[in-house]
Image 1: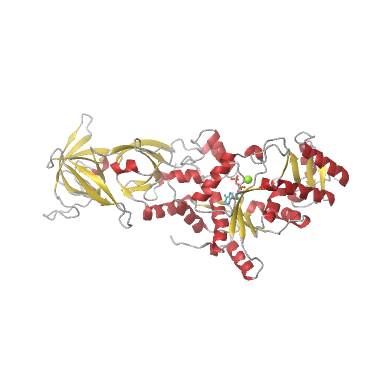
Image 2 (image 1 turned 180 degrees about the horizontal axis):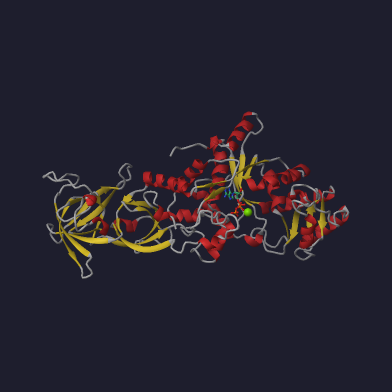
Length: 555
Ligand code: ATP
Ligand code: MG
């Protein structure tokens, strides 16, 4: 994978030109999540773009919570979002910002519009307003309240704020154009009455501005130079511009839209992800099967693998669906380079080395990584060791030339050469023990008789290996496009997306710091679980297989 730079994307080109022309001195962008759920992989694209632009052009990027729907928002989400952004490797400028910081200013702006005859209090019911609005084929009709006097509007709006009315009884609307082809301009709602507590402003307000009346002005207040957002807001841009043009805002941001990230086999909508959590399909927002940033983190994704993926997919003006194989490629390529190696035997078969004394104990020093200087680890080597059942065959054949077979040799990874002599079966006819002899007693040398083993197997000491729980994850959703069209993604849940098993692992792994990802030699990449892994009970999550393996990753 080549490291591409964000400079290649169209937004970066615009920024570069704006700086060259002197239109912009210092670039200020923002990432503006609504705290109504945890961030997902789609948000990572937006984070990398917004923070990336600021980094590239020596500017700043704000983190602003667009918190205009208090019923759906919470402090838990606010905390999780901050943690995710930091974990991805980005730092926002100054303090956290909230749209609710600007509620007073927004209220004053609304009053300005009323005074200018550009906003009015409408008392239609929600159903009536819907009917008056029309649709794509039918022009809207003016509300009978549209011509209320400025005085009456000011009075009504003040009383809305004072809590004199019930939820939904009145709304403040912008007076724009009920016949516009753009539905967003058909006298959009600016304020609605909601008698609810707000996580930041408490019970100060019982009217809340709509997202559309908040977003653009918040950008202006923060002097955002490039308001970057996803394509679905393209149709809202004329409305944002209308507010900006009609209000005494301190700056004029320009909005640029880019295509959302959609991934096959994945849902990227907080609402849908919340459903998976609420209905306990997964254990929580950070379940390793979730495409949330915290779920990916717990699965063993590294920040750089996610950032590299965002670089790989680029930024364009159109929506598309990215193959999840690209995300997996970015992950594998990062782990292949950086993950320390370790050994874990998932289906153990005992090998007794008959020419070693019963109490033989030796510590083999092995590198933690073949290429990087990641230090060393020690592997206890004893008379009884474990290898994987699949690495032993009762009868030799050419197909099994890399396997351990009676009369044949094998090299232990980072260890010695063994020869299989005979084996023992249980009543069920399964091989339960292989008796072998040590052929070499020096590391890294070939047998003197020239009969070199063809295969290398992973192993652990039977007496010193420790048991670990392995959580084997695969795709949560079995359909390539689980939520497109009229499909209900809940119908495509893979009932086998988690299998729990055990392995005997090299003893040092019990001490692994949570979140360390290892390449378990010949098995796959596994991460020490962030929450449950401990010295007493090692727990590893399958991050991803070594190679693209449909049976592993597809449901
Ligand atoms: P969701 O539908 O999951 O709730 P949202 O767009 O409502 O997503 P916000 O919290 O409003 O979520 O998003 C914050 C920022 O992240 C916005 O600028 C939004 O455009 C961007 N974003 C959200 N989803 C994606 C995505 N799939 N790809 C790229 N950017 C995204
Ligand atoms: Mg949203």
